[in-house]
Length: 434
Image (tube, rainbow, N blue to C red; front, top):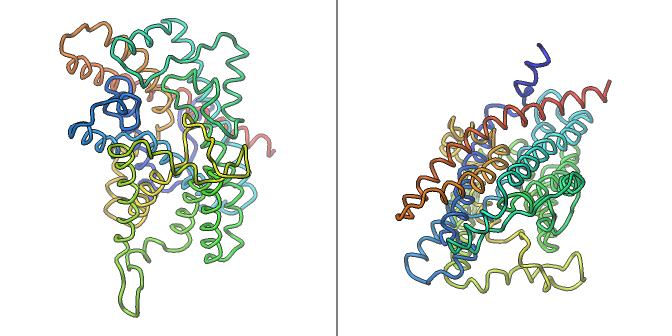
């Protein structure tokens, strides 16, 4: 009975209530991720960088729609935000608590990370494969053709247990071309590669954060800027993850919030309010997003060529795969400005720590894994069954049904899979230490 109770509730977290706003940020992007997945399927012209949006008429309405999508359901900002949030939070057990800075804290974090992600991903991919084998794959293709949707793909069919095992295994092994793997193509929406990047980059964070207790604060900041610049040059996702780690270090160890609220010293008693440079950074990212989406989409990938071609040449990155997700400047600047505001604003932290966002943030992985399955199965099937003359009404019905089903499914998945995986990771680490 005690063992059963233990698997019903997650182990004590080292994240204090003062960090609820970080969980709330995850909850905010959970909402955005649902909007993106749903609209990519049922209203792809409303998604800024989708194939349908690129072929939509260049009217004032569509430009306005693209601008709204950049703010509220932008896939690049969504997956980039999860990477920064992950780097910002996974280092906290090493920085805080009675076990902070010890060999046990770093070893436990590294060991538990794999188990806490592997089991939920394996189960979600198994559920997706089982459901599509039961209801078939053809309905996705029929739906796409009948609605003119150019922005979705039929999930790759996993035909054997060996293919399934290799698909899950590769999601935690691939180190480049993350989206070109069976596990990603087999999952509806083809966003499973995000888990791959987050897991791989967690080791960058772990290896870097161990220097924090043993180096000067000013040196760490300077070294982090150099690290970020170098990672940007070679087009590695590390410039996102090290940014998250730097934000955590400054917030936890350098009184960043207090200093930022005082302003940036210009001359003697003259101080520049910190929100001014934060606004410039945020606005520059959003303006770049808007320019590439609504004005010059043909230039959107030009920035990628400026990096070093790390995996195939010593020259510039001129032969990159446009289908691959990229670590982009516009996403980075928009998120950096946003997180600088979040880390230094009492009002924003209070707003993000609201119970709804915190609830969603704690279940962010479950929502990420469940909502795509629901939308690509129940949502599409329901749309095909409605046969409504008014397309907007049909889409609205599908929205509320899939939203409710995703919420219920994510809660079940969280309690039945994610929490036990969390507990199991602690039990396994305690066992190997004995």
